[in-house]
Length: 268
Image 1 (cartoon, rainbow, N blue to C red):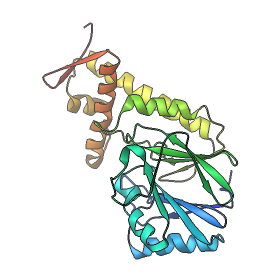
Image 2: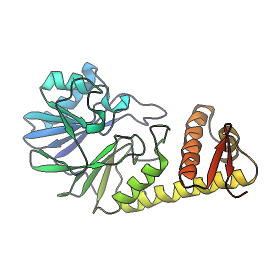
Image 3: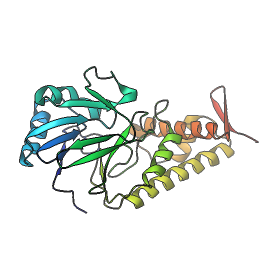
Image 4: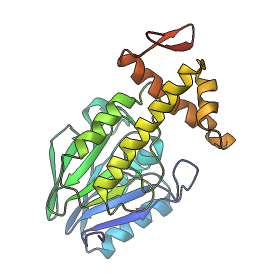
């Protein structure tokens, strides 16, 4: 499925190991539009978003929405607000974070744009205030960092929470989604398959963590090295975050205990 005509993407010039080709910044609307995520405050990034909006026939950028507060998604929000006069919104749990928000939103709120509306879905996991935005008319989900064009989302405790993340993914299966527009990477044309793939991947990782514990490996570092055997040095720390997140989920599930920085399966 192709991107609907009233939606455009300007990818920020911030490619990297964690941002892939860069952060996708979406312009949504016809005469008036909302922008979802603004990565950079540079003039080049501001010009790119505004020129893309003008090419769509947008006369006014009315609102700026943020999927979450990681810098590669909100770093240019205040600059775009100043440049365009748009109202800046943020999830209610992050009110005051940027110091210049104009409104707050929460789960199930509806935010209008020229030609439609977006439904706010509070989807914690990657970040506790993370939100996706769903447009029911074209059945499009703006997934932020909860679902990526390729690869998997980073769950970084303590704010990242694997239990919340899995619940957020399960919830997204309840929606009729034809297209996912992610925060990084290409669009996802088979949303249900992608979400189920993510769920299977996380359950596989959880099983690997449990298997490592059964073998007597009981530190995050040792468990990570046993699971991520081919990971590059640059991603080693990210892999450790994932293992930590799984261990904390298993503690909440009362399957693992932590003592003196070491982890043990309960009942063994």
